[in-house]
Image (cartoon, rainbow, N blue to C red; front, side, top):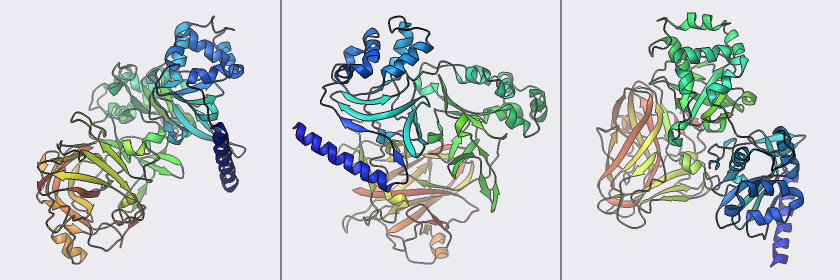
Length: 563
């Protein structure tokens, strides 16, 4: 058995070495497998490297559950790392360290799930630590060698070590948890004094200095402006900032422009840079207003938009000064000053298959099929996609379907679709989805799908509601796109939305809706006639009524085509 393991390990190491030689970059990560039954057993057998961390586990009474059945991820610091950590605590032994401080440290290094480096992104890990804060990972390249860095504090030099109750990543530094709120961290930095005074004068400082016990309400994200960023725009003091924006003289008022300025720099949720770039727009604390996000040459840029062919330059977020974790969220540094951007209605070409839960599965997103199931009616595996319960076994599933070769997805946006079983009486009786934020205005709504008729008698006639408003037209997943020119089709509520000319790829205009608030909107598809599993939803377009409804079309890689 062991001989087979060694042979397999050798083969894997050879393949990894071959890949490294062919790649322009090398990632210095060693993956291995251990026969130890658990995490504690692994550490015990390597006392020369982990004896101090083991002492901490014993003293904090953590060894017991790490020595039992479970599924954990442990970021294990070496003896050298723990020695440096103890020196920072001004002690020389584990016994001399404050017990609560050690407990917090251990909990920050443990996840109650197995998270391999394949799930690491440029942002927070998908699972929160036992301490209640998220870890952030990134890749740093030094002298041509790339390494994973966690929380900007520790480098992983051996990873994905499998044990009977989890995995271990070995790190070269002990990570320290955040101990201050966003407000406290900014107040401690003199280079943000003007912005901090604006937070205080508007009353937002108190809100950003609170740690809500409910994790669902705790996290905030702030884009802070330094004194230098403000000075570059001619604002050298808080008095000048107030004079420019506070038209009422009372920044605490919600209708005061200085209050709006600060509110526009705060958004709900924990959004590291890796999370921010995942969504094109983000709602702010200023009602009905959003910030837009683009990734331009690896730079995260706020509010760089094009209107009528004119590009409005955006504001870059400084990576080296951003992603600063706090006890109640995270904050970023803006390279320049920016104020509220009031927008006209803007088209949203929504790829319904790019939702958070599938994007957290790198082994499947844009790679392979995956089923999101609801074993019981109370389950909700996808936050922004929900469906009415159907009693027929096996149909309470949203299937994420990906393939660049399959005729069902070969011309779909990103080569993926959501396959929705639907129909009376046994399949889900409706599908409901929350869109990304849409700028307030009047829009035409288009449902884009790949037609699939299972039999000559199949019929999947549906009605569509947006924010509870019934749309004017029905749509049918088994109906092909009619023949005709673009103008002829648009006149009867149809268009071709992909580069492929087959009438199997269809987009149906279901109606017109007025959005009174810039926010996520809710769309529901309800079957009226028919029942089948293979309803292939690709995109939903929300296009301002006075804009071109037919163009752009889309290539599978997302490229827009304007012909």
